[in-house]
Image 1 (cartoon, rainbow, N blue to C red):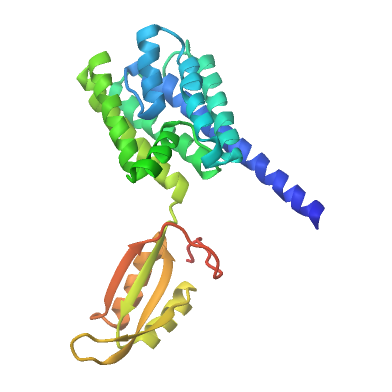
Image 2 (image 1 turned 135 degrees about the vertical axis):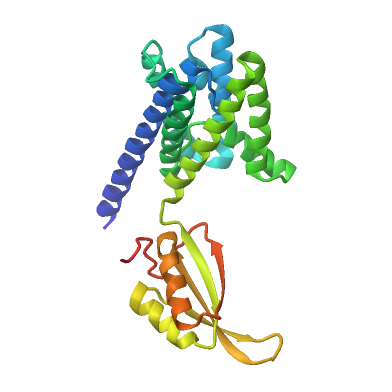
Length: 288
């Protein structure tokens, strides 16, 4: 059993290394073949590296590696050994990729196309690295360390840092480039979301209806999802009833709404995002 566990653990590490390497190569391609040749930057350490490379004419890969390194060392204790090792591995491959592609002809000289495709490819690359336990930029490490001291959300700190980076891009390149960079960052951010969370992102649904038994049965038969019954009391008439609580994927949500409305058009539903789901036999794959 112990030998099987070691084999599984080794296989997981190989998978992680493969996908983080893929993500790192994709980010290198996005930077060198789309964004940088068109004076469009990314946020975070990558953005600082692009500006520094432009001002000094030192290859981008050097700055990507050197500027990220101190933050990896700072985050070693707090973020864990495996995260730092995987992140260092990814940043190293990304830096080498940018160095190899530095003198390659860009895919496009159209700034808008560079923003759209460069942002998308970059987001997929970063998303793969995050999904498999690493990162490709030290900005989040800075944000995590500052968040614990300042009691400010990580996302707000990252956004605050990036505002200054994009303003700096406006002075170094031009304000059109800075504005294009904001759009590239937004596209990358949305792509990261999809890669990390997946298209089958979960939703929790609470349903209040007098036909709760029939609705629960229909959800089970047509979606293969079980519901939890929660004892409730109406605030106006004090009537005892049951609330239904269930978790479905984003792709199943529309079908669930149809099921409820077919049975009880007056049913009350609340729908919320779910960060992740564990246990309970929940399968994120949509049932068709």
